[in-house]
Length: 277
Image (cartoon, rainbow, N blue to C red; front, top):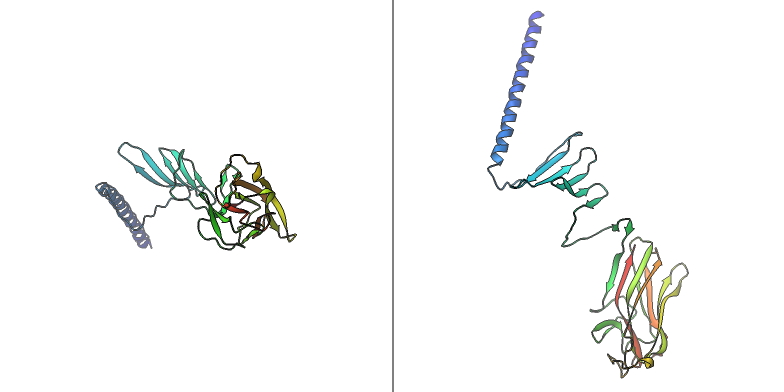
């Protein structure tokens, strides 16, 4: 029994000596790897894994010849990824936040799939932009004209009493909607009104959101830009309105209470944009 116990003690001692030697060899090998890496200016790897623990951060440090230091840090306590330059934070990424702390930021392309905030203010998200430089689609009248340098939907010889309507479908979740663009008065308007309406689904009726009148006879020294032999004293009038809205579709109607002769007086729209937030 005594002999067996002595043999056990001897075995444990030999194991400890062997482990100690292996640790020394590993330490020497790690130092050799570090020394070897210093001889290379380019290193190619398929993957690199740096693992911290619950108490220590995982850190990558990049230094140049003048001792300027960049650090990529994965914080052990919070799980936050940080990038800093000489201990000044540049970028912070967590599960729900991407925070840029640099004084100046430049992006070649930037795509947001969700909401954008500046401070605590939610920004507008543009979902529609129609300039009518190319053939439109989905409108009640899909014809474009050019008046001076402006391409527009409708216009001379096309729209007078007829309305321009379109329904915009599959609008992302939102609570407010904003519509901007330009309305164009062409030829002999005599005090008639232009208008924009929106279809309120809960009432199943159109309601006016914007109106404006124009009388070409009150224009002095005007210019005949396009159409018939009348001056365009107010060729362009911009509109911009915001309303509460949460439906998945939006139906807009543009029109005027003109006589039905688009060669005598007409209208068109351009630069239509729709935003949500």
